[in-house]
Image 1 (cartoon, rainbow, N blue to C red):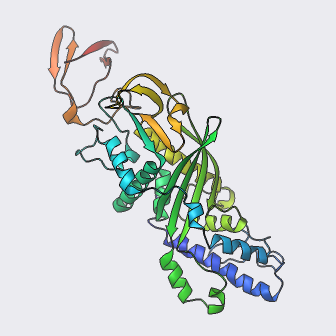
Image 2 (cartoon, rainbow, N blue to C red; image 1 turned 90 degrees about the vertical axis):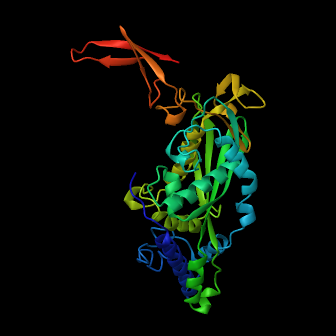
Image 3 (cartoon, rainbow, N blue to C red; image 1 turned 120 degrees about the vertical axis):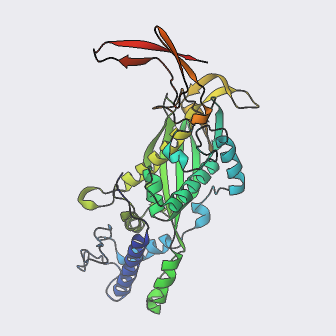
Length: 384
């Protein structure tokens, strides 16, 4: 993974510059003609804070349309944007309860950021339910720990949102009917400090034209399903600022996203919104894959241990929730990361001599021992 910037001060400065430029242009347009565009008056390619109005997609937008769209973007209707806000007091017990029995927790205290780095292992297969509000809480805790650690993060979506100094406000799984489901992720960026600084240093006549918000919201939409292996599959649909579809919202998105990742550029260095949206969906899927495999099963009602009738796939996706079947050391992909203290000694039979070893790592099947002669012999593992 490429190294990312440590914060989002640059992108916030850029977004404020872009907004102020539009405001100034609106003032000019009031004198010239509100039906003209930047292209028509020859300023579409003027470099303003490192960007041009053409690069932001505003070259052919009439000034009066900019004003209408800008007011909409800069006055977010939060109640209509964040519609499924999580309650930490409810989400934390569910998250901690599901993760409490994990065996590969290192020092015994599970850190949410560990789900970004490794598969979560249990002693048995369990069927756990994660409500979408709990998943939002989990993602926010991962962001908090990633911000505190300040280190490289092996999840592009978390790294991108961390570099924006974003907060996760919502994760929603919508049932669209007919076995189809949609993932909606809402993250917000606090620009209060920048807003206050800017408003103190611009002319009152300009300040009266627009009200800068305290937060800007990024809203991502993806279709989701699960394959026969229990892996979440996401297909990006759209990503928006303040859940608005407009050229001004798209322009602001490009400025916000531009300095947070080097993996989202399209042709000619432009910001590829589809790539950003795909990154968010894939990052979500990576976390779910570490928690377990999506599916359904018959379980012991008291312990939630799987007892039979396992079915991986879309049966584990429901309105506002996912059900996952947890991994054991034997079922984990790519080999498990196991706590050595939890391992049992193993006896190895190597004909004709029997040797007992205290192992530090699990042996889960037949092994091949190669000799210098290129011949080999199979050894049998016998667990005591």
